[in-house]
Structure formats: structure tokens, C-alpha cells
Length: 362
Ligand code: HEM
Image (cartoon, rainbow, N blue to C red; front, side, top):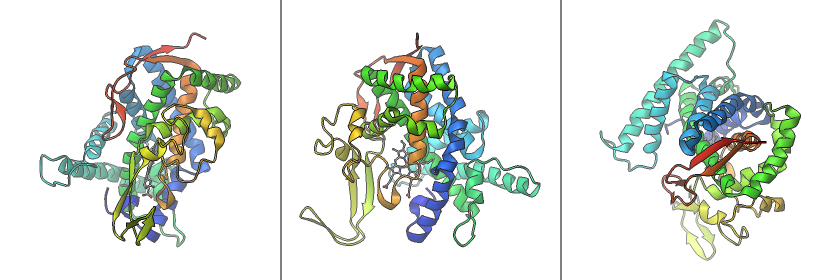
């Protein structure tokens, strides 16, 4: 992920980057404009799916997620540059869980080359912005500007390499995860007509008030049932199936000793499907979230502690927006409801969730 990425930093350096990233993408003041920025593409995508009639959901959610990321992160609009970025990110992501064999022909080698090229593309944009600033060109208010402008407690700005490594990291962290969670929401809702009905009722009421317009973060926070559907989707989808930690001291756990320096893998999918934590854990039941708060540590879709996902509010918000527009305007069904699920690198139906889409006859 690069030397300067949040993922490879610890202690004070990690905290400094987290503050910068969370204020750029995860605080209410950052999310407010983002909510309005992502909606035109989400609603346009839904319309295009209905026109196509039959879609492979994962392919489509990836497309719309990446278009929004381009816009949100570096003001890059659909076109040849965004297509190149997409190709490079796919090459990069394919190497993340590959063997560390660094020679031509391996996934790992290819991923490193892709990352270098990605950084160079973003570097050109970064240099351009420095010139623009000197010439008084108005800031774009996207993530790159946010990261370039942030100052730490001592008044220091992030270095160029920090901005670049973290932009690349954030795209990787936010791209596939957001696309997959969107696909799973559509998948679970297709299989849960009663949940969908309740969702429609809640969201149609808001949509009528807004005359079908875009919704704000304040309105999203009031969509109680929708937010429960978001949590339940994340619990069931287990997009990050596991998590790594290093024991920083000897630890005693349930009679087992974990020696200092050992690596521990938390199997998140197990935590989320353990009947001790969730009744009838394999059923898609948003109402279980009425009993909040869940027992500490039992919901780990975004990890936990100092490394908890700094994009969690952004991810939740994008999912709620998609669900809102989807539930008020569309009907859909799975073409292969019993398609097998593949679990690596992330859980997904093997057909990418093929769906039949229609406008709702309301
Ligand atoms: C549904 C979508 C997402 C899921 C399920 C998810 C899940 C996770 C998980 C499990 C972790 C590891 C936490 C830990 O070690 O305790 C993580 C870390 C991270 N996520 Fe997310 N994430 C999502 C979306 C996003 C988005 C949209 C962004 C940013 C645009 C993002 C940025 C990051 C970053 C930078 C880290 C590393 C944090 C650190 O090392 O301090 N994620 N995410």
C-alpha cells in the first residue's frame, strides 16, 4: 500500500493520518456535501439498469461506485482517464492477497507496477492543483484538496507522498467494499419481500415530501428502518471476512496463551453468524437492530479499536442513499436466486448477482 499509507503507520503517525482522513471523509460536515455529490450518479445508474432490464449487479455497482470515487476523490469525470484508473486499480487489488513473489508475470509484481502508475497519475493532478492555487483557481473541495489542505496540531500539512499513498489506499479500501455492499443490499432485498415493503413505506413517505429529489444526511439519519437494513446488510455480507492483529504483549484468552509478537486473525464472519450473538443468525432481519446496542465486539463489519474503518459513515451513507432511491422507484428479482456463493477474495454470488430490473408500477 506504500510507505506513507495509514495502513502501514503506527502510534502517533497513524493517529495523525487518521485525523486527516476522518475529517476529509467521515465527519458530518464532510458527509453533507458528499451526499449530494454522489446522488446524481446513483439515480442515473438505477435508471440505466431499468432501461437495460437485465443486469449483473456487481458489475454495475462497481461502475457507479468508481465513477463517484473519481469525482469525490480527485474530480475525475467518466472518460479515458477514469477507465485507465479503473484498470490499474483492478490490477492493484488482484495483488493485495497474492503471494509476495516480485518478478514479472506474478500478480504481486503486476500490482506493484499498477500502484506506481496510479501514484503518477494522481501526482500530475496534485502538481496541477499546486499551480492552480498559486494562480488563485478555486479549490475543488474533493478528497485530494481535503488531504492537501489539512494541518496537524503542529500546523504541518501532509507531505505530497502522504497525500498520494493515502489517496490510492482510500480508493482501494472504498471501491470494492462499497460496490459489494451495494450488490448485497440489492441481493438481500430481492430475497426479502416483507423487508422491502417496509422499506418502501418509509422511503416513499420521504420521497413524496421531497418530490423525488435528493436526500440530505439529516434526512438519512431519520430513516430508522433504512439504517437497520444497512446494518443488517453489512452483518450478513461480511465483506471483510477477517482482520489481523499482532499481540503487543503476552495475552491470556479463554485459557489460551497468545505470546507477544504472534499474529491473530479475527474471523469476523464467525462473530456475525454466532447464535450466541444473533438469534437465527442466517436470516436477514433488520428488526434485530432494535435491540441496540449489541454486545460490545459482536458487530465488527468495520473492525474495531484504533483501526476501525475510517470510511464507515461514508460507506453507510452511500448504502442508505442507494436503498432509498432503489426502494422508491424499482422492482427487481434475482435471475438465479440459488446461485452459489464464492468466498474469495470477498463473498459474492458466482453470477455477480444477475437481476431483472423494472420500474415500479405505482
Ligand atoms: C462497506 C464498506 C466497507 C467495509 C465493510 C469496510 C471494512 C473495513 C475493515 C474491517 C477495516 C479494518 C479495521 C480494523 O482493522 O479494525 C477497514 C479499514 C479501513 N477502511 Fe474500510 N470498509 C468499508 C469502506 C471504506 C471506505 C468507503 C473507505 C474510504 C473511502 C475505507 C477506508 C478504510 C481505511 C483507510 C482503513 C484502514 C484504517 C487504519 O488502518 O487505521 N473503508 N475497513
